Image (cartoon, rainbow over all chains, first blue to last red):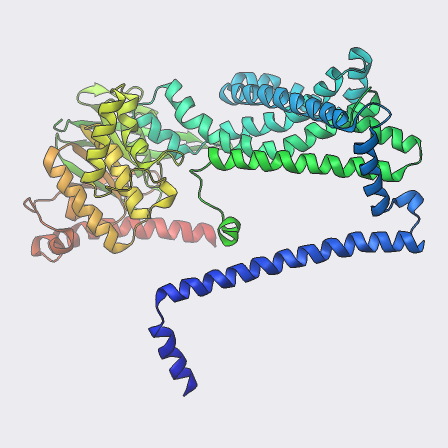
Length: 290
Length: 269
């Protein structure tokens, strides 16, 4: 009997009411996820602190959260041996951003140019393969020798790392244009310039923007590795110096700062992506989370 | 903008497969679409129907033989041609309004005029209010309406349609067919309409071309003498003349369909 009554009750319930219930269920779920995240963070950091305090894990090698925190405080309060801490952050960010912009710009232009020109693409193909096969981090050593310890070699290293990711994506994006869409534009009377502007570029844009996420991570890698190889300022230099002083807290402190910087920039890139690619359908995962 | 004649004479189209073999898609195809005629091409899967269309549109060139539109041999994209594709071919990064206006923008029509005419066409296909949506936000039937408006806005003298309603459900397909007939009767372009649905072909067309399967060739041409205006496509197919024609054409088509089926089944085994 109760099932019949339930059914009647559900049938009679206003749709408005049902939406409200769905919304509150959704909020509850979100709360649970965030709660679990916070618990996990406490577990990891707390466990780390506990084990190093108890001496189960040697804080001389593995650092300690409280030590990392104190070191960060110290950096901001008293500066570093190479100048104020914000100055170090600024140097690294500057190198990474310049490298990111240069690498992206050159990568997009060359990727699209080669994607549109089959002959040039075939001629350059083996050369690109060879350059791509070189472990590019090693180029940093050459750049430092050639351009000294200023920001130029770091910018170049970051740019080289970014270039290849963006270049291959732009190239592929141009090649992967939907044939139906392309033919449709042609039959509608599009000139070659129209096709490039209205079809090829927007289509390649999805690929290029997707590559920018990982590209900024690589720009930071280029900047930091460049600084480790030889610099006067920067987070990479601080890491190298902390390593030389047997100071794991310092290494971890800088590592977390770098991670935070990458996350902030990726957040910005994601915003830009959402604006530029507003025409795309939301994926399954996105619509579930909305 | 009345229709113009399409002549396909002794056309053969061969492709080179990736493995280096020569594949003949169509062989010695000859038929004519009279000015303002609605011509349907039916045939089993893989009989080169779509190849024929791409030759008329100028997207592809014949290996031998000639295709001419309005007495001029096709060389490059044919002028005054509208094309409705089987798959979605709207530009996904453009809104409904931008998609419909595209043909005019490419023809250097001033933007203001292009937008005004696009709005008018959007209204005519019943999508007023959806101008700023992106294609992925529309249903399959609505996307077809957009494609129809985008193809008609340039006032083509030749309309090529490659199973345009193939992916739609039966009801939507019937509605779209009726709307297509309505538009066609207003301006009478020559239509080359490809389908595998014989009922659709007879209901819509003045002439039905039956093709054999690989390599594609014309098996027989039937003239459909059901008088116009024919009314809704759902009604036509119960008429006596319709059934008679259907029976006659199906007898021709059946052999080819069975033949093609046996071949693919054999290949699969």
